[in-house]
Image (cartoon, rainbow, N blue to C red):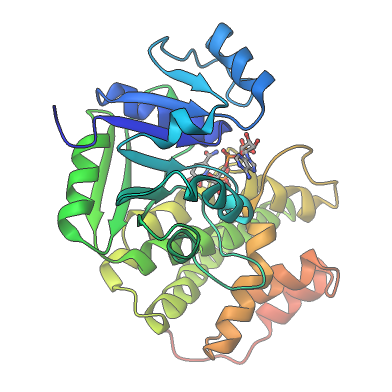
Length: 326
Ligand SMILES: NC(=O)C1=CN([C@@H]2O[C@H](COP(=O)(O)OP(=O)(O)OC[C@H]3O[C@@H](n4cnc5c(N)ncnc54)[C@H](O)[C@@H]3O)[C@@H](O)[C@H]2O)C=CC1
Ligand SMILES: O=C(CO)COP(=O)(O)O
């Protein structure tokens, strides 16, 4: 029996459902946990999740709302929104009585505490071995078996490598690293920057402006990453630059789609989770505490909370003093 034969995914949204298919494809015994019993029963009987329409789940995936069933797995993937990750791990904590990998699959930073996802896991469950999975990967693409590559980070390299072996397949290629913080910063910041990129498109500022925004966005993502001790190769890897490029290039990204709506002066798309809207204020607070300049992220945060109009934000960014490129 290989290490980590059983996998439980906590959170049966789009990403959790896609990750359950990933683990099943990799040959693991998979449990998908939904907090709502009716939702779990419906997915179990139809093999279809309305959050990921058109994707048929293999019948081998056990769908349950019984936490004790899920918590007994050899590894746990937490696929709730970032602001709900603590409550999900709190629920699991009493079931985790020996060391078990708990992999954060959410992209964000906790409000109030400014904590990254693996720190939240470590605080909420003493026996958890925290890890993070992030990178350019839309749930729909992943679930359909389109080729995808991501980064999986844990402090212990042997653990990160073993987790990659357990989850990887011909269509889902995780790369491992010990740079946990680098992976977390990329995933959190790219969502905020994708909102800015969407605004550029929604305002019809042109393809040149989109390339400029994405590049200067990467510059500030990398600046914060370096200030937090992240490695350059992580920041310019799949979970940093890779995910930024994906999310700043297509309305398949909910954050980019939110930006487009804002840029056009339209209402935000209904019922779509855009993590960048939650991350923006925390990201700029974190940057300010570390004295890192993040003008694009600051502009997004100010637009979202109504302190700045989009036109004023664009003018403000374009009239900053000229300076050396770094
Ligand atoms: N959808 C995607 O393509 C990808 C999403 N992600 C990340 O995954 C996270 C989740 O996103 P989605 O699945 O797309 O969102 P979603 O809105 O489709 O689903 C979120 C799910 O979490 C559940 N949930 C909320 N609070 C919970 C709690 N306390 N305990 C258990 N379950 C809870 C909800 O019932 C819902 O089923 C986000 O941080 C997102 O950035 C990462 C990569 C790709
Ligand atoms: O993180 C993602 C792709 O890597 C999903 O992006 P959105 O949350 O913007 O849809």
